[in-house]
Amino acid sequence: MLMKPLSLLLVLIFAVTTAACGQSKEEKAMENEVENTPGAVEPEVAPSPPEATMRPGEMVWIYRGSGSKQCEGGGMTLQQSQAKLSDNGVKVQESRCGVRTDRMFPAVCGAPTGDILMHLVGMDALDASIELGYSPAEKVQYQFAACRDNSA
Image (tube, rainbow, N blue to C red; front, side, top):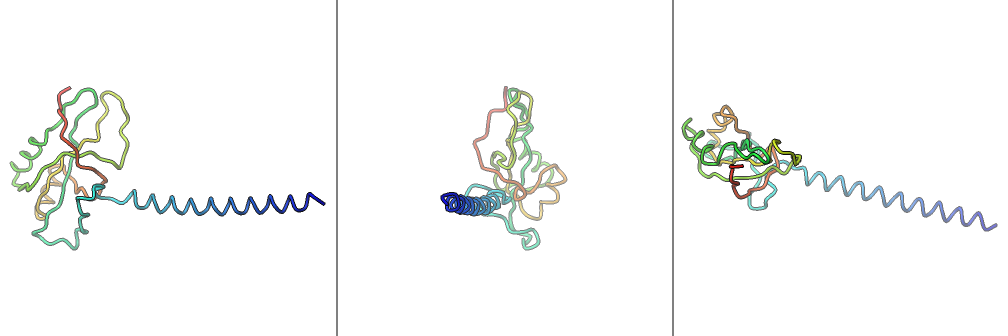
């Protein structure tokens, strides 16, 4: 006689915990959607509108990896990167260092760092920038960061 109410109680507990797990999965999925949104993760940088809606006078952040290696340093400095663009006719409005936050970089000497070099350029210079090895920053997650010393 006692087994039937106990069994019903266990079934009820199982149903409640299963329902609660389903809700947390949905909440996690919604959190991941927010976390994986491309573009800057710092609130001070507004997300760029899609390229189709941008007008010729508008600005866009571009980036490239610094080329710095863990434990070794090296790579390109922010000033060298800016000079590369300027020497090829791309007018740079602002330059900043950053770090990618959308991928992990293993802590191994000789492995690349997540350091990136970022420049604000006119939309009309985007194609020229891409030809020089830069990419639109709106396609990755990043944070602005202090520039690091590239010496080992």
